Image 1 (cartoon, one colour):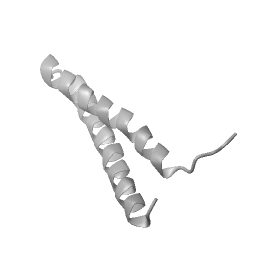
Image 2: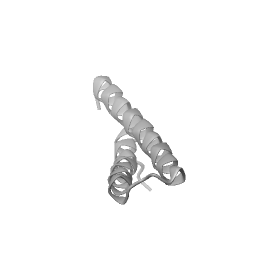
Image 3: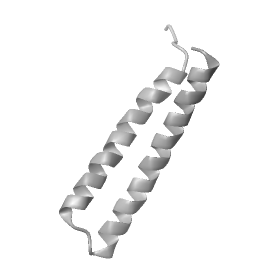
Image 4: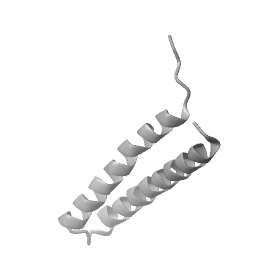
Length: 68
């Protein structure tokens, strides 16, 4: 993999991880505020889940293959 591709992949991975953390914080704040509606919580949870499941796939592309 070329170094430019690696830099781009790391940037995407970093953005996804930050977005995942931000969404988790927002979800917690909504839940504790008592003013959250089910629709916005559900949408935030889906987006957070997408970010969380997308990150490991991006990390796998950065790691070298290991033959056991």
